[in-house]
Length: 116
Image (tube, rainbow, N blue to C red; front, side, top):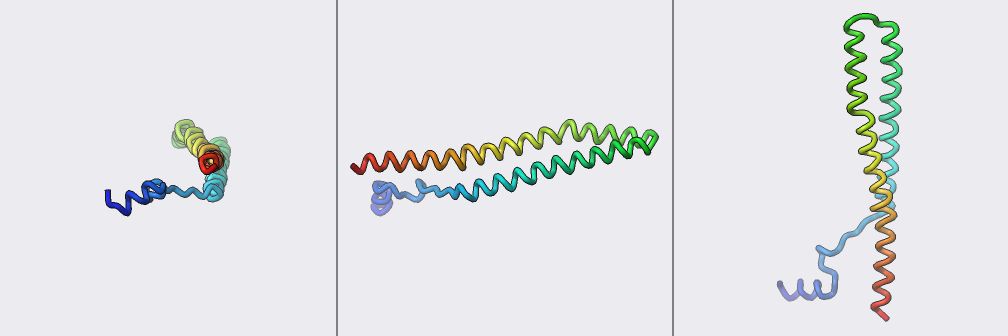
């Protein structure tokens, strides 16, 4: 290891060790993602309502097939997609936003103990 990098490493400021997290931006991103996730779910519900209304007026094999295809898509995709994104939002808010702040405060406290 070159001398100047060894010095940085010993001082604890090696570039590979520095990770900066803007928790306010992470939290804001999680909020926006959550908003769009709910909007997609709500929009899908409106489409489902329209499909059901159309089914009452549209009679025939094509109608039955269209409603069946939509229902399959909804059953296989809609709820699972919502849950995956919702879990991601929870991860961002709990682990990154709140968790990172807690770890940083704890690290600062421990660093202060070593300074004494």
